[in-house]
Length: 97
Image 1 (cartoon, rainbow, N blue to C red):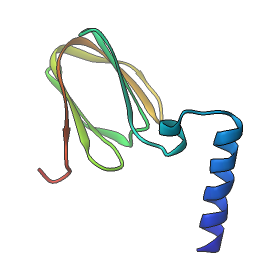
Image 2 (image 1 turned 90 degrees about the horizontal axis):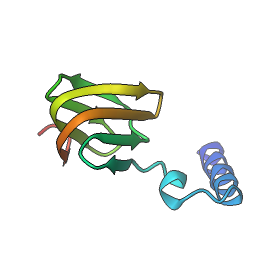
Image 3 (image 1 turned 45 degrees about the vertical axis):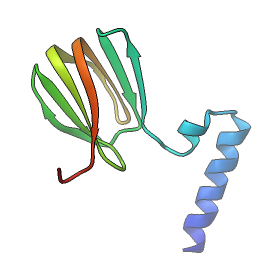
């Protein structure tokens, strides 16, 4: 238990010294949109489902559903995804619903 606390405090000190935004420091999900053509989501855990009409992502606390048409994943890394197409909606949903 003490090791986890020390690791967390060390990571927080590192994030502060690098002057990272508070959202990044806490590992919160960050959603950025460019009009209705592109959405970028950072700090997510994985892809639950993927069709041209809906992409469902799992985050630490909930799920994010991106709906629209002609959706495609342009960039996908361990903690960042870029989705393009016509973005009709971005919704948050608690897991299990």
